Length: 427
Ligand code: HOZ
Image (tube, rainbow, N blue to C red; front, side, top):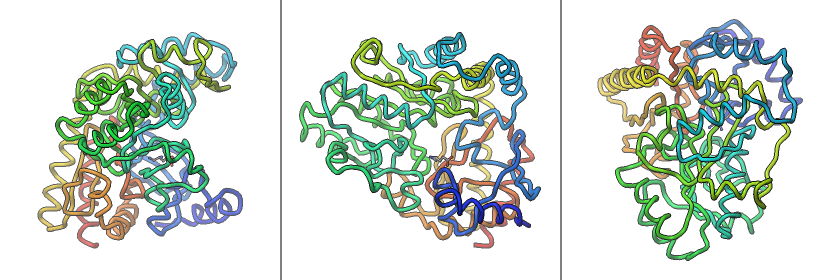
Protein backbone atom coordinates (compact mmCIF):
# COMPACT_ATOMS: atom_id res chain seq x y z
CA UNK A 1 0.00 0.00 0.00
CA UNK A 2 1.17 3.48 -0.76
CA UNK A 3 1.32 5.61 2.39
CA UNK A 4 3.22 8.62 1.09
CA UNK A 5 0.95 11.22 2.62
CA UNK A 6 0.71 9.36 5.95
CA UNK A 7 4.49 9.15 6.12
CA UNK A 8 4.93 12.84 5.31
CA UNK A 9 2.37 13.80 7.95
CA UNK A 10 4.13 11.61 10.50
CA UNK A 11 7.46 13.32 9.79
CA UNK A 12 5.81 16.72 10.31
CA UNK A 13 3.97 15.50 13.42
CA UNK A 14 7.27 14.34 14.92
CA UNK A 15 8.45 17.94 14.78
CA UNK A 16 5.37 19.20 16.59
CA UNK A 17 3.97 16.51 18.88
CA UNK A 18 5.92 14.17 21.23
CA UNK A 19 6.45 10.97 19.26
CA UNK A 20 4.15 12.40 16.58
CA UNK A 21 1.03 11.24 18.42
CA UNK A 22 -1.40 12.38 21.07
CA UNK A 23 -1.58 8.97 22.76
CA UNK A 24 1.38 6.56 22.81
CA UNK A 25 0.00 3.32 21.29
CA UNK A 26 -1.05 5.22 18.18
CA UNK A 27 2.60 5.58 17.17
CA UNK A 28 2.80 1.89 16.08
CA UNK A 29 6.17 1.85 17.82
CA UNK A 30 5.75 -1.72 19.04
CA UNK A 31 5.25 -2.68 15.41
CA UNK A 32 8.13 -0.75 13.94
CA UNK A 33 6.24 0.92 11.10
CA UNK A 34 5.03 4.52 10.88
CA UNK A 35 1.41 5.09 11.94
CA UNK A 36 -1.41 5.51 9.46
CA UNK A 37 -3.08 8.92 9.40
CA UNK A 38 -6.84 8.64 9.10
CA UNK A 39 -8.96 10.94 7.01
CA UNK A 40 -12.46 9.57 7.45
CA UNK A 41 -14.52 6.62 8.61
CA UNK A 42 -17.95 5.15 7.96
CA UNK A 43 -19.53 2.05 9.45
CA UNK A 44 -16.85 -0.62 9.85
CA UNK A 45 -14.36 1.10 7.55
CA UNK A 46 -11.54 3.60 7.82
CA UNK A 47 -9.82 5.47 5.00
CA UNK A 48 -6.35 6.89 5.42
CA UNK A 49 -5.05 10.13 3.92
CA UNK A 50 -3.66 8.18 0.93
CA UNK A 51 -7.09 6.75 0.15
CA UNK A 52 -6.38 3.21 1.44
CA UNK A 53 -9.40 1.41 2.91
CA UNK A 54 -9.32 -0.70 6.08
CA UNK A 55 -11.78 -2.82 8.03
CA UNK A 56 -11.46 -1.30 11.48
CA UNK A 57 -11.16 -3.33 14.69
CA UNK A 58 -9.88 -0.47 16.85
CA UNK A 59 -13.18 1.37 16.83
CA UNK A 60 -11.51 4.38 18.45
CA UNK A 61 -10.47 1.95 21.24
CA UNK A 62 -14.02 1.00 22.05
CA UNK A 63 -16.56 3.80 21.67
CA UNK A 64 -17.66 3.05 18.10
CA UNK A 65 -19.91 0.10 18.93
CA UNK A 66 -22.47 1.26 16.35
CA UNK A 67 -19.82 1.83 13.72
CA UNK A 68 -18.38 5.12 12.56
CA UNK A 69 -20.46 8.16 11.65
CA UNK A 70 -23.73 6.43 12.53
CA UNK A 71 -26.70 8.40 11.16
CA UNK A 72 -28.42 8.52 14.56
CA UNK A 73 -25.35 9.99 16.24
CA UNK A 74 -24.75 12.46 13.42
CA UNK A 75 -28.37 13.58 13.53
CA UNK A 76 -28.18 14.12 17.31
CA UNK A 77 -25.03 16.20 16.84
CA UNK A 78 -26.60 18.21 14.04
CA UNK A 79 -29.59 18.99 16.23
CA UNK A 80 -27.44 19.94 19.22
CA UNK A 81 -24.60 21.96 17.70
CA UNK A 82 -26.62 24.96 16.46
CA UNK A 83 -27.94 25.48 20.01
CA UNK A 84 -24.39 26.00 21.29
CA UNK A 85 -21.59 23.58 22.05
CA UNK A 86 -20.69 24.38 25.65
CA UNK A 87 -22.23 26.47 28.40
CA UNK A 88 -20.49 25.48 31.59
CA UNK A 89 -23.98 25.27 33.09
CA UNK A 90 -26.48 22.48 33.70
CA UNK A 91 -28.43 21.18 30.67
CA UNK A 92 -31.36 18.78 30.17
CA UNK A 93 -29.11 16.43 28.18
CA UNK A 94 -26.88 15.56 31.12
CA UNK A 95 -29.92 14.69 33.22
CA UNK A 96 -31.18 12.44 30.44
CA UNK A 97 -27.86 10.63 30.05
CA UNK A 98 -27.42 10.21 33.81
CA UNK A 99 -30.89 8.67 33.92
CA UNK A 100 -30.08 6.23 31.10
CA UNK A 101 -26.86 5.25 32.85
CA UNK A 102 -28.57 4.67 36.17
CA UNK A 103 -31.23 2.51 34.56
CA UNK A 104 -28.53 0.35 32.99
CA UNK A 105 -26.26 0.35 36.07
CA UNK A 106 -28.53 0.39 39.14
CA UNK A 107 -25.43 0.44 41.38
CA UNK A 108 -24.73 3.97 40.10
CA UNK A 109 -27.31 5.74 42.21
CA UNK A 110 -25.64 9.11 41.64
CA UNK A 111 -23.62 9.79 38.51
CA UNK A 112 -21.08 12.54 37.81
CA UNK A 113 -20.07 13.29 34.19
CA UNK A 114 -16.48 14.09 33.32
CA UNK A 115 -14.57 14.30 30.06
CA UNK A 116 -12.55 11.05 29.88
CA UNK A 117 -12.20 7.62 31.42
CA UNK A 118 -8.95 8.70 33.04
CA UNK A 119 -10.71 11.59 34.74
CA UNK A 120 -13.53 9.31 35.88
CA UNK A 121 -11.11 6.89 37.54
CA UNK A 122 -8.95 9.60 39.13
CA UNK A 123 -12.07 11.15 40.61
CA UNK A 124 -13.57 7.87 41.79
CA UNK A 125 -10.32 6.98 43.57
CA UNK A 126 -10.41 10.33 45.34
CA UNK A 127 -14.00 9.66 46.38
CA UNK A 128 -13.05 6.20 47.66
CA UNK A 129 -10.25 7.72 49.71
CA UNK A 130 -12.43 10.58 50.92
CA UNK A 131 -15.29 8.28 51.90
CA UNK A 132 -13.23 5.65 53.71
CA UNK A 133 -10.54 7.95 55.10
CA UNK A 134 -7.98 5.40 53.89
CA UNK A 135 -5.06 6.03 51.53
CA UNK A 136 -4.14 2.75 49.91
CA UNK A 137 -5.73 1.25 46.82
CA UNK A 138 -5.37 -2.24 45.39
CA UNK A 139 -5.16 -2.77 41.65
CA UNK A 140 -4.32 -5.72 39.44
CA UNK A 141 -1.15 -6.19 37.40
CA UNK A 142 -1.76 -5.44 33.74
CA UNK A 143 -5.03 -3.62 34.35
CA UNK A 144 -5.02 -0.11 32.98
CA UNK A 145 -7.21 2.57 34.47
CA UNK A 146 -6.06 5.66 32.59
CA UNK A 147 -3.01 7.74 33.32
CA UNK A 148 -3.76 9.06 36.81
CA UNK A 149 -0.69 9.02 39.10
CA UNK A 150 -1.99 6.39 41.51
CA UNK A 151 -2.87 4.02 38.66
CA UNK A 152 0.37 3.96 36.69
CA UNK A 153 1.73 1.10 38.71
CA UNK A 154 2.15 -2.21 36.86
CA UNK A 155 -0.21 -0.71 34.31
CA UNK A 156 -1.28 -2.39 31.08
CA UNK A 157 -2.17 -0.94 27.67
CA UNK A 158 0.37 1.50 26.18
CA UNK A 159 2.34 1.51 29.44
CA UNK A 160 3.05 -2.21 29.01
CA UNK A 161 3.50 -1.91 25.25
CA UNK A 162 6.28 0.63 25.76
CA UNK A 163 7.80 -1.08 28.78
CA UNK A 164 6.90 1.72 31.22
CA UNK A 165 4.23 0.12 33.41
CA UNK A 166 5.59 2.21 36.31
CA UNK A 167 5.77 5.69 34.82
CA UNK A 168 8.46 8.24 35.56
CA UNK A 169 7.06 11.30 37.28
CA UNK A 170 4.88 9.43 39.76
CA UNK A 171 6.14 10.31 43.25
CA UNK A 172 7.29 7.23 45.10
CA UNK A 173 5.34 8.39 48.14
CA UNK A 174 2.16 8.12 46.10
CA UNK A 175 3.01 4.89 44.25
CA UNK A 176 3.63 3.30 47.65
CA UNK A 177 -0.08 3.58 48.32
CA UNK A 178 -0.91 1.44 45.29
CA UNK A 179 -0.79 -2.27 46.07
CA UNK A 180 -0.88 -4.77 43.24
CA UNK A 181 -1.96 -8.37 42.89
CA UNK A 182 -2.05 -10.72 39.91
CA UNK A 183 -5.41 -10.76 38.10
CA UNK A 184 -7.54 -13.74 39.14
CA UNK A 185 -5.45 -14.27 42.30
CA UNK A 186 -7.84 -14.02 45.24
CA UNK A 187 -5.35 -15.51 47.62
CA UNK A 188 -2.91 -12.67 47.02
CA UNK A 189 -5.73 -10.17 47.48
CA UNK A 190 -6.61 -11.70 50.85
CA UNK A 191 -2.95 -11.66 51.87
CA UNK A 192 -2.59 -7.95 51.03
CA UNK A 193 -5.84 -7.05 52.71
CA UNK A 194 -4.65 -8.74 55.90
CA UNK A 195 -1.25 -7.11 55.58
CA UNK A 196 -2.76 -3.60 55.51
CA UNK A 197 -5.76 -3.73 57.84
CA UNK A 198 -8.10 -0.73 57.56
CA UNK A 199 -5.74 1.01 55.16
CA UNK A 200 -7.21 0.04 51.77
CA UNK A 201 -9.83 2.43 50.40
CA UNK A 202 -10.79 0.44 47.34
CA UNK A 203 -10.06 -2.50 45.13
CA UNK A 204 -10.15 -1.33 41.52
CA UNK A 205 -10.58 -3.87 38.77
CA UNK A 206 -11.49 -4.19 35.11
CA UNK A 207 -14.18 -6.86 35.62
CA UNK A 208 -13.17 -8.17 32.21
CA UNK A 209 -9.65 -6.98 31.57
CA UNK A 210 -9.11 -5.35 28.19
CA UNK A 211 -5.78 -3.65 28.59
CA UNK A 212 -3.37 -6.58 28.80
CA UNK A 213 -5.36 -7.97 25.94
CA UNK A 214 -8.68 -9.52 26.91
CA UNK A 215 -8.46 -11.56 30.11
CA UNK A 216 -11.61 -12.99 31.67
CA UNK A 217 -12.32 -13.19 35.38
CA UNK A 218 -12.25 -16.80 36.50
CA UNK A 219 -15.23 -18.28 38.28
CA UNK A 220 -15.47 -16.85 41.76
CA UNK A 221 -12.89 -14.08 41.28
CA UNK A 222 -15.24 -11.11 41.15
CA UNK A 223 -17.54 -12.68 43.75
CA UNK A 224 -14.49 -13.17 45.96
CA UNK A 225 -13.52 -9.53 45.61
CA UNK A 226 -17.04 -8.48 46.55
CA UNK A 227 -16.86 -10.68 49.65
CA UNK A 228 -13.45 -9.39 50.78
CA UNK A 229 -14.60 -5.81 50.29
CA UNK A 230 -17.75 -6.39 52.31
CA UNK A 231 -15.82 -8.04 55.11
CA UNK A 232 -13.14 -5.37 55.36
CA UNK A 233 -15.01 -2.13 54.66
CA UNK A 234 -13.23 -1.69 51.32
CA UNK A 235 -15.03 -0.22 48.31
CA UNK A 236 -15.21 -2.30 45.15
CA UNK A 237 -14.56 -0.12 42.13
CA UNK A 238 -15.38 -1.52 38.71
CA UNK A 239 -13.61 0.16 35.83
CA UNK A 240 -16.14 -0.46 33.07
CA UNK A 241 -14.76 2.17 30.72
CA UNK A 242 -14.34 -0.58 28.12
CA UNK A 243 -16.94 -3.15 29.18
CA UNK A 244 -19.77 -0.74 30.02
CA UNK A 245 -22.50 -1.01 27.35
CA UNK A 246 -20.24 -3.41 25.40
CA UNK A 247 -20.33 -6.90 26.92
CA UNK A 248 -23.96 -6.26 27.91
CA UNK A 249 -26.08 -3.13 28.16
CA UNK A 250 -25.42 -3.07 31.90
CA UNK A 251 -21.76 -3.99 31.45
CA UNK A 252 -19.85 -6.74 33.21
CA UNK A 253 -21.76 -6.12 36.44
CA UNK A 254 -24.98 -7.13 34.70
CA UNK A 255 -23.27 -10.15 33.14
CA UNK A 256 -21.81 -11.41 36.43
CA UNK A 257 -24.61 -10.05 38.65
CA UNK A 258 -22.26 -8.20 40.97
CA UNK A 259 -22.94 -4.81 42.44
CA UNK A 260 -19.94 -2.49 42.53
CA UNK A 261 -19.76 0.32 45.09
CA UNK A 262 -18.30 2.67 42.51
CA UNK A 263 -18.25 2.34 38.72
CA UNK A 264 -16.34 4.22 36.05
CA UNK A 265 -17.59 4.56 32.50
CA UNK A 266 -16.36 6.27 29.35
CA UNK A 267 -16.00 5.46 25.65
CA UNK A 268 -19.46 4.19 24.51
CA UNK A 269 -21.44 6.60 26.71
CA UNK A 270 -20.01 9.47 24.63
CA UNK A 271 -20.80 7.89 21.25
CA UNK A 272 -17.32 8.83 20.04
CA UNK A 273 -17.06 12.21 21.76
CA UNK A 274 -14.85 12.88 24.80
CA UNK A 275 -16.64 11.70 27.90
CA UNK A 276 -16.37 9.81 31.17
CA UNK A 277 -18.62 9.22 34.15
CA UNK A 278 -18.30 7.84 37.62
CA UNK A 279 -20.97 6.94 40.10
CA UNK A 280 -22.00 4.66 42.88
CA UNK A 281 -23.96 4.29 46.06
CA UNK A 282 -25.67 7.47 47.12
CA UNK A 283 -23.99 7.69 50.54
CA UNK A 284 -20.57 7.43 48.83
CA UNK A 285 -21.28 9.85 46.00
CA UNK A 286 -22.70 12.34 48.49
CA UNK A 287 -19.09 13.01 49.40
CA UNK A 288 -18.60 14.75 46.04
CA UNK A 289 -18.69 18.57 45.98
CA UNK A 290 -20.93 20.51 46.23
CA UNK A 291 -22.62 17.93 48.50
CA UNK A 292 -19.46 16.87 50.28
CA UNK A 293 -15.80 17.56 50.78
CA UNK A 294 -14.29 15.65 47.82
CA UNK A 295 -13.50 18.24 45.19
CA UNK A 296 -13.83 17.53 41.49
CA UNK A 297 -14.90 19.86 38.68
CA UNK A 298 -14.65 20.37 34.91
CA UNK A 299 -15.39 23.09 32.36
CA UNK A 300 -16.51 20.60 29.71
CA UNK A 301 -18.13 18.09 32.07
CA UNK A 302 -21.59 17.14 30.77
CA UNK A 303 -20.77 18.80 27.46
CA UNK A 304 -23.97 18.93 25.36
CA UNK A 305 -22.38 17.48 22.21
CA UNK A 306 -20.96 14.52 24.10
CA UNK A 307 -24.24 14.03 25.98
CA UNK A 308 -26.27 14.10 22.75
CA UNK A 309 -24.01 11.55 21.04
CA UNK A 310 -24.10 9.37 24.14
CA UNK A 311 -27.89 9.46 24.45
CA UNK A 312 -28.33 8.61 20.75
CA UNK A 313 -25.96 5.67 21.19
CA UNK A 314 -27.54 4.28 24.34
CA UNK A 315 -31.04 4.61 22.93
CA UNK A 316 -30.00 2.49 19.99
CA UNK A 317 -28.19 -0.06 22.13
CA UNK A 318 -31.14 -0.61 24.44
CA UNK A 319 -32.60 -3.46 22.42
CA UNK A 320 -31.48 -6.99 23.32
CA UNK A 321 -31.11 -7.77 19.62
CA UNK A 322 -28.05 -5.56 19.48
CA UNK A 323 -26.09 -7.64 21.98
CA UNK A 324 -27.26 -10.91 20.45
CA UNK A 325 -25.94 -9.66 17.14
CA UNK A 326 -22.60 -8.64 18.63
CA UNK A 327 -22.33 -11.91 20.51
CA UNK A 328 -23.04 -13.89 17.33
CA UNK A 329 -20.42 -12.00 15.37
CA UNK A 330 -17.77 -12.48 18.03
CA UNK A 331 -18.58 -16.18 18.41
CA UNK A 332 -18.49 -16.75 14.65
CA UNK A 333 -15.13 -15.02 14.38
CA UNK A 334 -13.64 -16.96 17.27
CA UNK A 335 -14.85 -20.31 15.91
CA UNK A 336 -13.35 -19.66 12.49
CA UNK A 337 -10.07 -18.22 13.73
CA UNK A 338 -9.66 -21.24 15.99
CA UNK A 339 -10.06 -23.49 12.97
CA UNK A 340 -7.43 -21.51 11.11
CA UNK A 341 -4.86 -21.50 13.89
CA UNK A 342 -5.39 -25.19 14.57
CA UNK A 343 -4.90 -26.03 10.93
CA UNK A 344 -1.78 -23.92 10.76
CA UNK A 345 -0.54 -25.30 14.08
CA UNK A 346 0.26 -21.84 15.40
CA UNK A 347 0.40 -21.51 19.19
CA UNK A 348 -2.29 -18.92 19.72
CA UNK A 349 -4.59 -18.37 22.64
CA UNK A 350 -7.86 -16.52 22.06
CA UNK A 351 -9.67 -14.70 24.83
CA UNK A 352 -12.97 -13.01 24.14
CA UNK A 353 -16.16 -11.51 25.50
CA UNK A 354 -19.08 -10.05 23.56
CA UNK A 355 -17.68 -7.51 21.11
CA UNK A 356 -14.04 -7.79 22.18
CA UNK A 357 -11.24 -10.24 21.61
CA UNK A 358 -7.47 -10.77 21.76
CA UNK A 359 -5.34 -13.22 19.82
CA UNK A 360 -2.35 -13.89 22.05
CA UNK A 361 0.69 -15.29 20.30
CA UNK A 362 1.30 -17.83 23.02
CA UNK A 363 0.08 -21.32 23.84
CA UNK A 364 -1.91 -20.01 26.78
CA UNK A 365 -4.11 -20.12 28.67
CA UNK A 366 -3.77 -16.39 29.32
CA UNK A 367 -5.27 -15.68 32.72
CA UNK A 368 -3.17 -12.78 34.05
CA UNK A 369 -0.38 -10.34 33.25
CA UNK A 370 2.41 -12.92 33.56
CA UNK A 371 0.79 -15.30 31.09
CA UNK A 372 -0.16 -12.42 28.74
CA UNK A 373 3.47 -11.30 28.74
CA UNK A 374 4.53 -14.75 27.48
CA UNK A 375 3.21 -13.71 24.07
CA UNK A 376 5.60 -13.49 21.20
CA UNK A 377 5.29 -9.79 20.45
CA UNK A 378 7.62 -9.99 17.44
CA UNK A 379 5.25 -12.46 15.85
CA UNK A 380 2.32 -10.22 16.70
CA UNK A 381 4.09 -7.30 15.00
CA UNK A 382 4.64 -9.34 11.81
CA UNK A 383 1.02 -10.43 11.88
CA UNK A 384 -0.15 -6.86 12.37
CA UNK A 385 1.86 -5.61 9.38
CA UNK A 386 0.54 -8.38 7.13
CA UNK A 387 -3.02 -7.59 8.20
CA UNK A 388 -2.56 -3.87 7.59
CA UNK A 389 -1.26 -4.58 4.11
CA UNK A 390 -4.41 -6.58 3.46
CA UNK A 391 -6.62 -3.73 4.62
CA UNK A 392 -7.37 -4.77 8.19
CA UNK A 393 -6.69 -2.20 10.90
CA UNK A 394 -5.99 -3.91 14.24
CA UNK A 395 -4.88 -2.40 17.54
CA UNK A 396 -1.12 -1.94 17.10
CA UNK A 397 -0.18 -3.84 20.24
CA UNK A 398 -0.44 -7.37 21.57
CA UNK A 399 -1.81 -5.95 24.82
CA UNK A 400 -5.05 -4.44 23.53
CA UNK A 401 -8.49 -5.70 22.55
CA UNK A 402 -9.93 -5.89 19.05
CA UNK A 403 -13.38 -4.34 19.05
CA UNK A 404 -16.32 -5.55 16.99
CA UNK A 405 -19.13 -3.21 16.06
CA UNK A 406 -22.70 -3.60 14.90
CA UNK A 407 -21.52 -2.25 11.56
CA UNK A 408 -19.20 -5.17 10.84
CA UNK A 409 -20.85 -7.24 8.12
CA UNK A 410 -20.54 -10.95 7.41
CA UNK A 411 -18.43 -9.95 4.41
CA UNK A 412 -16.11 -7.91 6.68
CA UNK A 413 -15.67 -10.86 9.01
CA UNK A 414 -15.00 -13.33 6.21
CA UNK A 415 -12.58 -10.95 4.53
CA UNK A 416 -10.78 -10.49 7.87
CA UNK A 417 -10.62 -14.24 8.44
CA UNK A 418 -9.16 -14.72 4.99
CA UNK A 419 -6.59 -12.03 5.76
CA UNK A 420 -5.77 -13.73 9.08
CA UNK A 421 -5.26 -17.04 7.31
CA UNK A 422 -2.87 -15.46 4.80
CA UNK A 423 -1.05 -13.42 7.44
CA UNK A 424 -0.59 -16.41 9.74
CA UNK A 425 0.71 -18.39 6.80
CA UNK A 426 3.42 -15.81 6.22
CA UNK A 427 4.79 -15.30 9.70
N1 HOZ B 1 -5.55 3.80 26.24
C1 HOZ B 1 -6.05 3.38 24.99
C2 HOZ B 1 -5.85 1.91 24.79
N2 HOZ B 1 -6.31 1.06 25.81
C3 HOZ B 1 -5.42 4.12 23.85
C4 HOZ B 1 -6.14 5.33 23.52
C5 HOZ B 1 -5.72 5.98 22.21
O1 HOZ B 1 -4.57 5.89 21.82
O2 HOZ B 1 -6.56 6.58 21.59
